[in-house]
Image 1 (cartoon, each protein chain N blue to C red):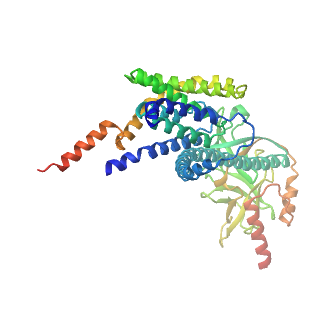
Image 2 (cartoon, rainbow over the protein chains, first blue to last red; image 1 turned 45 degrees about the horizontal axis):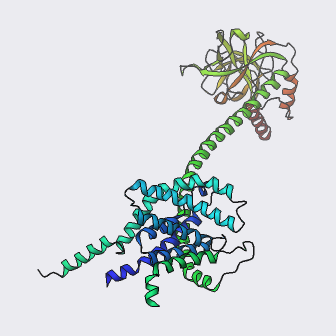
Length: 188
Length: 312
């Protein structure tokens, strides 16, 4: 029962984390110089669900994350939904076909995802005829974005791993929980 | 149909995942936007969380900022206190300079009134012995100061130069037992020699017993010997003792100069023979405040004189 409750908390917990991330992004980066290094934490969440959730759950969560971002942003509708969905699909494809063996690969994923996200946003804006004023800004943001995402992804993933472990979403945690449960039940 | 759906579930889901975002792209970027019903529902659900998160973050940020600003305030406070201390020092210095300016102006006025050449000097030391009441000034032979020159300030006679070096001079004050200045009572013209008695008093010696000397009488320098200009206030009589026998009377004099507050003096290097100030002083004795410099002895003499008149 407790395990089920903990598991049930995982998805609302992730949504709450997304809200917290959005609040952080909306609060701490007012300074234009600091804003240059503002990470898009939702990208990390999308990458996480692309790697650690099944296709359906991950995709729906990605749509929810994109929707939440659009609720809080003045960006054209559908922009973040599309952007995050592309990232989700590409990350999932890569994760299923290539192994993320070490931290360096993870950092590379963070950097590539961030750069791809910027370019993708520019591309979508171009499609809706809004890229004229945006490309220079995107070029300016590419390097800081890549650096900050590459630097943060190991820490964010470690936190998410712990979160999954606590909410028993992690298979290893689930096994350990069940083992402990049966040990408790075992007669002396 | 269900079987078909199950078979192609992945591709259908993928198609959905691609279609939903792409179809939701709004190309009317600048058109006014309204929240849709489900947007409102989502906002209603998420807003309390967001508000709580914002509140917590804002509180943390403001707490941190307040803490930092308090930290800064402490340093600012220290800097301001330091600055304040410096400013207070500056103000005190300025007040000191103002006082010095007043004193020097009085000295200058005094010098002009008495038509004499004088060197302004500052007191730099006092006698090391408590038995003698000499002072050292910061002007010496290099400034034209020689032994026996008169030393005055705006209140009256200070003393005479005892010895000089190139840059300093020792001055025997009126209070010193070695001092001797010829003086006369302004009212009765009775003469005598003023010598030091205590740290605060002098005595008029060799005043004849028959001379008319009353407490409150003003003593002025006689100018004999040529060192002191004539008519410089020396002090005021405060006590007269006449015995039933003898040639002289004992007269105690309070110096016109307040030696406890002495800071600058004038060393008289040349004296004009006919000072006009004596008339002024005599006028002052008759009630008109025409004395060039304020003198405590002069004022006490005025008070004593008034008391005497009232008693009569």
